[in-house]
Length: 128
Image 1 (cartoon, rainbow, N blue to C red):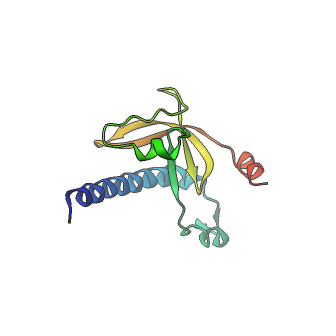
Image 2 (tube, rainbow, N blue to C red; image 1 turned 90 degrees about the vertical axis):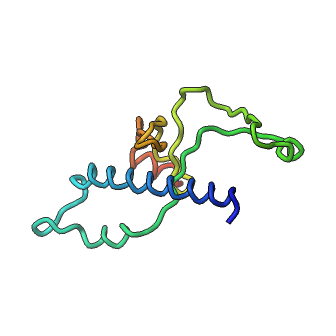
């Protein structure tokens, strides 16, 4: 295994651990919001979708560049984004905006503190 593969694997493992910790924290906070039926059991219809995997990503900003400029990028290159420092980053689920937040450190790993969650009705309206 090359040094680059080792670094990529460590980064992947760290991101996975962070996402699991954040998911557990979010689940603990939202467990009181899950519909309860028949003495505390969850809605069986909701149970069907709880294990569907989703892709969550955080977007710091965007830019456009020419292929020739892209090919010239290397270690130490700086890519200017369309957002200012300190602006909230966007949290996307399956490429759909669901929240905005700020970068935080969680046990020496990066995390996201959500500052604004898009309402369910707004999310449904954006699907149309």
